[in-house]
Image 1 (cartoon, each protein chain N blue to C red):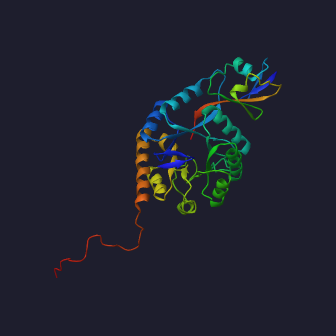
Image 2 (tube, each protein chain N blue to C red):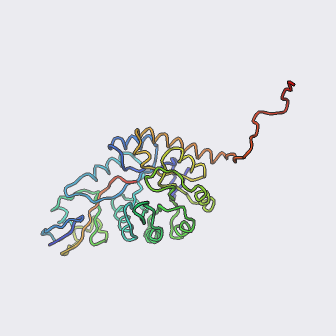
Image 3 (cartoon, rainbow over the protein chains, first blue to last red):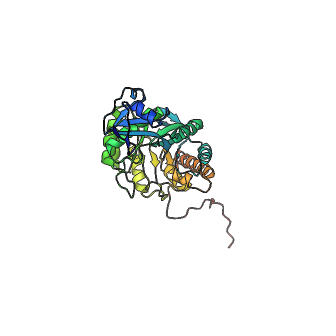
Length: 65
Length: 257
């Protein structure tokens, strides 16, 4: 499946958002996720099925003004 | 005491966390400022990265309230999604709403800002809108559900200080009961004191502190200036006049010739 994760293209075999994050070593309670411009709560990642060409954003706390 | 969204705040300085030369310098500056609110953002995490977690831990150890921003967003949709993601991470309904409309000045797109403020307020967010000093926009933001306004006094990071004092004075006069926080453009403690003397409720700083030679010392200086400006406002200041007025009594003055 071809997925765009934080702007980078990935060819990866996974079926859910949680599987994708594990495969790419994204780990931490401080992460926020969105798929195709919609928020996906942390509790919903296990059941969130990905589709070819989905766009995934994985964000993390950062300094800011 | 300053009240923002039913939260009582004793410090009238809000501090950004960006641009410090090292995490320890940031921590020292936050402590020296005695701020109770720091601003943070969300950015893409790298695969396998743990930097966000380390930063979050640093911020939590400071014990302040967290005000996440939507910096870098240029549309209502981007800002709303970023706000929702920030609530997921930081566990707060507070959001410093930025919707940028111009790349050079980082001036807010006030039309998208009002729209985003309405959407977020309806979804339970407590919105701190980064706006201009335009009174009509301010009215629209209040109608959209905002209970705090954060006008710029100059472009973000410019350090120019207040560029339109009459507009700021007018804003204070039009919205006497709305907490007004000057956000962006402050460069020096005297700038902060000036807007506080006008009756603004607080100042949000970042670059002026982070970019100083000694950020902690500058944070302390700003805290004193903000407090001094507030005290001056509450004490009631003299109006300037054109002619001199002797401060020493003239009655009883000796006549030598």
